Image (tube, rainbow, N blue to C red; front, side):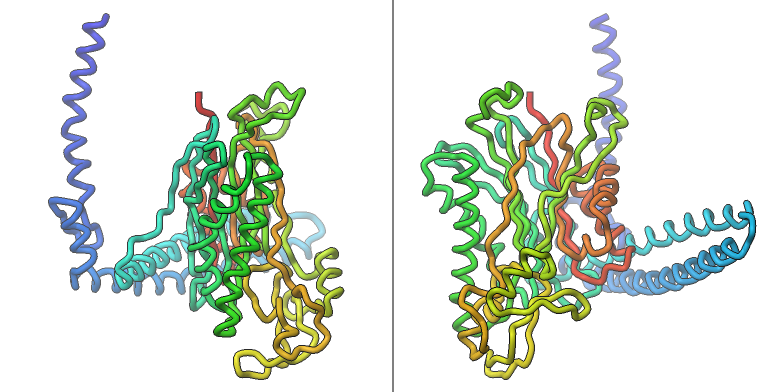
Length: 466
């Protein structure tokens, strides 16, 4: 039997050799130009420097933009037909089986067209990113990441689209990693949504990870309390350092933050035998309206393949009309009013950046940066108490990670959550084969749901190591 198995293995290896050779050759193909290259470096040089490749890609982009316009018209037509069928059904005394069937078919056709619409935008986003990388001469930021923390192997994937906005102010960090005073790894990810410019959000990307490491290193040991304090101190330090720069040039830039850190639980709670050394906890810190949601399998069905998946919120949006946030804003002289969305407003005119600003508002009640909203009294705005109408103090939540029931976490900017519910986001991501594919699919669905904002989604999952 051993000889037989060895022979089968030899046959399999011989049969797979041509396939491996063909696969190696296919890796160095420019499908747009229909050309094959001997090495990866020659393919990369062709994609970077070839005028032929540039013209082909521009032609494909133009074709895809036209396809998007056609898909928009198709969506409008299908939606109009669905409305007509609904009106016909409402006017009938008894429901018509034909009309009901017709509506089902139209709804399926609409979903298919919306899917193609999202795929078309994904192609344009990739083309835009490749063009930006070529112009800047810098490498694309990584979109996947693996790390080990305690008993868990972490995997993360991200997608980030400019969408229909003129500029991209969303950012992400996929490779946060630092050590506790005892030498244990703490790994994390973050999504940020900039506003009024990208100076603040870029500053966060550059300095937040370093500040987290610095603040954690000053603690005696790793506990829930010391890590919480380190995150609070790092956020305050990052915000104040940026405000120092903003004061010099009177910049209005600001940013939200949703941060997730995975760390080993060194001292499990007494009486909980399931939490052995090496088990991990998850800390989520929120500033603004970017959001974190966990996918969790329900109850006793968690061990069964068909377990029901629930969306468990890990953060609360800092919207100006949230009761506790509104009280804080108004206690310092600000006002909360609805102009398109709920906003925090300074109480009167001010002089900022050499201009008289009659009215200035912000659609979140917590953010990094936003100098004018934090120090309006410095700029001749009457009626504001010191301390800031908005703050950068994070709300922090810590939960145990139970690999048997906790499946993954989705972090995303408000451009996603404005059109996709937390439960729908979980359902979309759970059906995908990898974190990166889950993030990409979520953005396709988000874009097809008429989100015109910058959109970013980051999916973090884990598995228990033996």
